Amino acid sequence: MQKIYDSQKILEYVSEFQTKAQNIKRYEGNPYVKGDNIAEHLSRLARLLISITPQLKTEFPDKPSLIEETLVTLLIHDDDEVIDGFDIPTALKVHNAKDEEEVSKFEQAIASLGDDGKSYLIPLFTSFRKKNSLASKIAKALDNITGNQLVIEQEVGLINPDQARFAIEYIEKVKGISKTIDSLIEAQIKQITDYRKNTLINLKGLPNNAERLLKIDILKHTLDKAKINTPLEQL
Image (cartoon, rainbow, N blue to C red; front, side):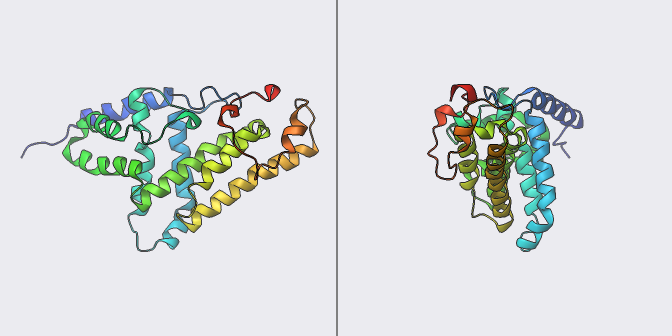
């Protein structure tokens, strides 16, 4: 019987992708966010998924493979960036513009996993681009939610009304997939609006224009993407 995979090559593949993912920075050009790379992003996604797994299993009892499919999708969804060696910031990225090229590169990159490995991973990688399954839709929603978390944790960027508005719109567009996901989205929007409201009360140490920026109604504000990465002092 012909061997369809090589264990040594599998180990080499994992080492290569992990090392590259650790070295690819996210939020390049964003003055409000420090740190984060693709490997850290994937770890955060996995933790978020396992944190809501009981709720998802209750919500979708007829989907026994949902968690597995979602987790695998999350862990490979950015492999196109790992392969290319860089991450395009979300606000600048043209999504789904190179899907066929990305799938082709991915297929070549995982050749060492053998036919079974490719048959398992390629459909999930492709599905994330097409958003044609429940798992891929949940994965995309979690990706967007997680993408906002560093902005919220590091706080200062939320004073910029365009950065805050972009974060809200980024998650609002993935609503309606699941009650569990929608609950996370509403909670994250509340984090954003609460921070802006509470910071307006205490402006100590902030730029002189912070009060004006925080008084803008973020839920009605019209997004200007060109200002997302503009430092507060220049707004």
